[in-house]
Image (cartoon, rainbow, N blue to C red; front, side):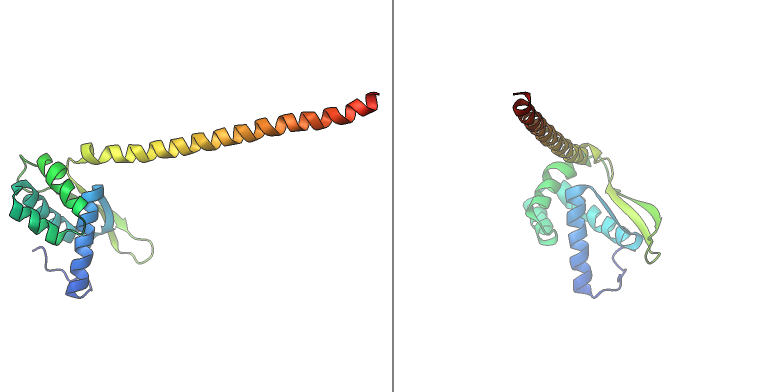
Length: 165
């Protein structure tokens, strides 16, 4: 039964952590965490998506009371919930990864099902930014080398002229 795991924290700390994780999951579409936390986040995220599908003022206020950021509520109601209009539950997927290196805790990835179309373009933008940074570095390096080469040639020519006279 979801919602009964204590996760080794007092109720207020546990709920704050889970609310933050649900908010982050709706912003990014994927989280890597422990398996038990992922199962708890999965249940709460499914409830939020169900609220988003209702798309009423009351459901929007309930989502605002639970989620940490208004941007996440906006994404939930305008982009994420319409993706699952024909689906009755099962909006998240939990994939086991294996034990964590430090303490051996079972790790998992939790992601929104069939939401790659919405979340994938953001990753490409990051790649484009990285490519743009690399291109700027290459331009700076080529400019530096272009500036250094004429200086070296000028220095070599100056000593030759006095010795030629």
